Image (cartoon, rainbow, N blue to C red; front, top):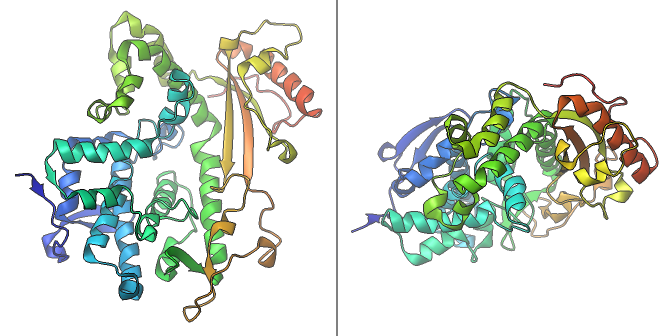
Length: 446
């Protein structure tokens, strides 16, 4: 007999598992959730730092995807409880719906790779050209794997709903909202990440949680909360700029990618993405495995990791922001582009240079994400509408995406030569010097 998951479990908190979270306070875990939490596949999330390598710059950013997943579980429950209280009969929300939404929140990141998004966005595309693997797809496979491997007794219909709620689409939007970008996943990580990095966060998700309303199977918001929603997207973009894509964090990520690439043939790291039974064994500890190994095949990878430990990082040369009128047809800059812009002096090789093309937006690329959000005037009105920025304030941004090109030298002695080649490239491309800093960095940057 498998482990039974009764979706009509009692909500009496005295009968639930209590965990104290440093963001949300006491979180209460129901038996159905504990069936998944108390598995090696879910416990793996403790070994995945939420912000990957950001703790190398922000020492407090050591929180994991484990606590983030518990936070999303908890907020998903609060959100659906709020909707049920106000519109439960109207929407036909059942107790089983509440359990399933919370379970979807709990398991949304169970298929995540190591080092935050670096694994799927930087490492895998270098191993498999045109790789379309995503942690979202792996999460779906991992849920099936956990159910089968751990003999969790959950009916097929409920399992399907956990992975993709096609009916009552608004239920799934609570956790991962592909329609307007507002979901409890963002609510949790924005507050959690800001706190861990010692940054202020004046975005209050509680206001949106308390006032949201389902209209036409879509979660809508009061028109008066327009600026609060804008603050959500602006805070997220600020975290990307100051933490997730911090220039030094990216330098370390680029080094880790190189280390993993050099270790991949021997350790077969990338091959683990094919099967959940192998993938769950992969976490951030892969760096330590490489570092302490005596295998000659891992020496080059070990040397790179040793450089990181000793803070002998790839050296930042300079950066520029791609002009707005060039964004639509922008092609990623490569080391070869920089090398082709040399004008004498030291002869650079492609392996001497790393280019990082960093895209930061408000979740909708060059488009205003608030145009995807449906608003209502008040609770007595059934009319939904969108709001134009210029009707609110002329201080809101007129553009919604940045593309920043950064160049690094792998060798300190080549910083000046790489910087000069980079300068020649952007002068040739744009006709003017668009560097954020006027002079190249000739000193050790660490």
